[in-house]
Length: 336
Image 1 (tube, rainbow, N blue to C red):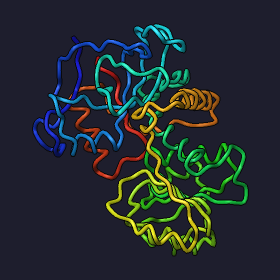
Image 2: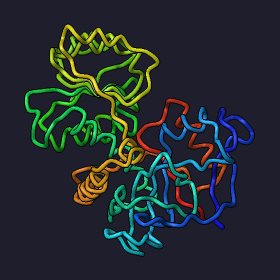
Image 3: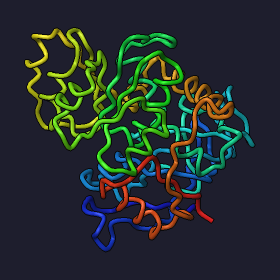
């Protein structure tokens, strides 16, 4: 048996039993799985969305996607890792989560933990790094070294995805990066991440970009896409590309036709959900991100350490994520 934290009923974090500690069976690795002792986790918007709206079907559901830890056992077909390896990963939304003492994950989704980061700090990187990498290089279709003379607008630059996307775009492409931020602390954060220019998303984005004299070819819409969509269509170059990660209720997609814009969603769980032939890509990109963190090309996006994993600390981390005031990533150590 092992300890874990999950939820029994979907609803607000303010509910008395919004999160509960569980004793559950120790998971057993399948042929392609690693059994990992979880030593660090992070909280992402997807944790909050699932807990608030997805009613568990068969008993409590264990939350958590990001993790860093030590491999304890491997499945019969595993070739990339062995017991004792230090790893980090973002898991699979269709399987039990990482808010647990032990966790199983397909080796194709796992990278080697950055040696320069502790377990909690390393756990803050996988989900957002995969999302940002896939958005930049798969959805927007850029290649490393490309983009000189073009611009990328990052809407929601101070969040977890925005924080690493700014860095990837600045370090691995030639793009000029404009990020949105509305407070002094978030503005300072996106500048620390490397943004060339910062605009205020409390104002119409097309007017803010017009004042800069910049019309970007690429827009990464990471939050409030529905609110900003009309302005985004106005400010982007003809034949530009909009990529988003959030969940707008409705968009006037016909509005992008006059400019012949491209439009795409990034969802980093798609590969694991559908067991695609290229799942290995996430293993490879996490190893690349790990190396870029170790050689200081990239910097950690962790901005808050919430203590050791327990119900009280995890509740506080969910509350911070829901507040809309989180900057960068929030992480916790594994169970003590």
